[in-house]
Image (cartoon, rainbow over all chains, first blue to last red):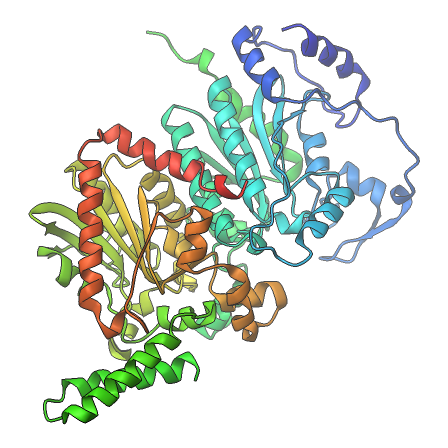
Length: 318
Length: 307
């Protein structure tokens, strides 16, 4: 134990990002072996950065849905949900993570996956490197362990800002590792999906990630693990047809596009216009593929409730 | 000569050979020409192979079943809502051993192809396949799947009925089956629609089959917004059997006669038969949990060769 536990305590007071109060902690001390498992695979928590001057904060954000204008600073506070019309705009994986977990608790999973280019796709490595610099992510998914209202979980957040959140080898490996670590540490898994599907630039090996991640979910699930998926805009193709749709509990954000084939491909195939709202979260709920649609502002609380509902310690002992 | 012209000429000679009335001089002239055409098939491009993989005369799943198995009993329906004819299969015997055999069904002609939706399953097809496979597990039957599809059907109802869920469920469940699974890509294996019946202990490809993340047309359309650049995509995608063997994604290649299987399917059926016997002999010594574990490990480490 020791080291990280200490650091975390100090940081909880230092970080002021979400404004949500960590509720009174009722959980007992985690077992030592779980800490050992986690320390071996997790990085130290990120140090809270000093607020640097942020020229973007006072820029204007125009809602693509209703046209209303807001300061970026204000949009950040409302998690990029338009205060006028409720449209859920894109939010980066890092920002989502900061707003989700108890302050200072998130520790990134250490999965060193080098940039691979199995197809020798022209200028692919350069593209990845440029995206790494731009987004501050090493690949299309942010994975680690964090706490929600004091409950630990493995949390995976896909970032559509990184090549449409597409799944190549690195993304598949991180998702798989997330389930493996969760199984070892006996933690639940929460995944926020956002992906155009399998990553074309890595060819057949991207397709194989579908089997790899689905198998990992199956194994985790067979051993009693809890997996909650939050489907966000967009979740399509090879991600939608693998780990995204294998959760015990499936939530979705309002208006998220969720489906296997893209709407354009379907229209071309069947030669007719698709109905209003087709493949949107609400449509999936109607057709029986989503437990609940949850507004972004309410997700943290809803997830905390679901973790509570699956609390092993609260099982009746007869 | 391009592959289309070569193929047409070879097929013409195939037909001429069946004619008894040919004089010996003509026969030897045709044989010589055929040998030359066969030689021209030695270095096919990826695009040529896509052409052969989709060839109308290529054997279809019912041909493989007739050639390799006895006492075939067709199983129909997903027992939830409908019978999807794009997946075909059932129970049969291979050298006396009961097996479950299934695969995509493309049809031999346009009428059949329309009836079978060109081998593009809807969720019901995948659920039917899973029903058959779970039953195979229950009765300890090995499973053999034949992959030949342009992809899962991108339709309105398919989406409404949970195309994604049907595919992901197959991937997850297949990964844990406690009975051996062998998959053979016989034609084109495109996207999740192919993989959804392809999570096998051993994956083989026919020499001219192709297996890829998406059809070359779809690949070109997504990356370059131009589906007409499919030929270019073929060269880039590394979708031939040789490529996939190099990546470690497949376990073996089943050779085809020059110019493609349709010129002499019998020899290929024999090779497939030998391969299945060889694999069955290997599985014989493995416990159900070892078999499931082997498959899990295979896909867990499927990208190790390139990492």
